Image (tube, rainbow, N blue to C red):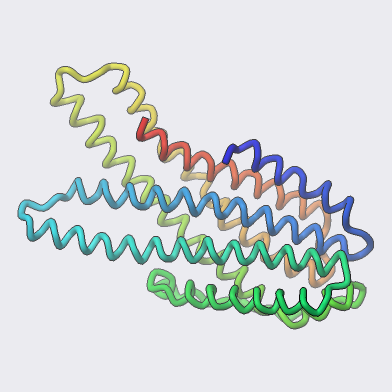
Length: 295
């Protein structure tokens, strides 16, 4: 997906919502579309993380390749098991993020119209699935090792919102808080691991594709070497920005609490949208850095 498309999606959120929402419910509609944009950005980052993860572990296997066939077989199987657990967590997070986006769509519907009984049933099923996936994420060994404890704050829902929306928030605010908190804490774990993987990938690629050919191959292609060296040495350039994912998820959670407590402002939402836009750019940069290694 081209980066300008994602930028247009985020830029259109505020205008679309202000045109379609009305009265005191517009804050909920605006937050809902913001949540949908958040989901797009996080999904992009998770896709890029999967690719980096596989390449990083593959490079590590090549670097530490054992001498005997039996040892290599054990290393391969052990690495595969570790990768499978990690990739399963990333897949579950993508599913979890997609369900959150779908919930925000339903929340927007509740904020802008009187929902039918069928729509409310669909929301019930959606939240049930979201909780089930969240439980699987919290039960993943990589997550349980970090002892993640969801933080729940009980807030009174203000009376000025539509009755269907008010009933939904009263029933589900604790559940959504838990799932947003899971997003924040697991994304913190994922971004820390991604930083490590990017660093190790760069080190191993530099050794295998730059240093060794430069020292041992007298026929090395100058143009290919210059191009590869730039790509590899800039691979970790996104590391200082990766904290943005955790920060955005944290801000989304606190914005949800402020929304229920009638404290959310348009300025705060626009600030969150700006951060989401930055996150989308970072995810695209990680994807580009990864794909260029094949160039």
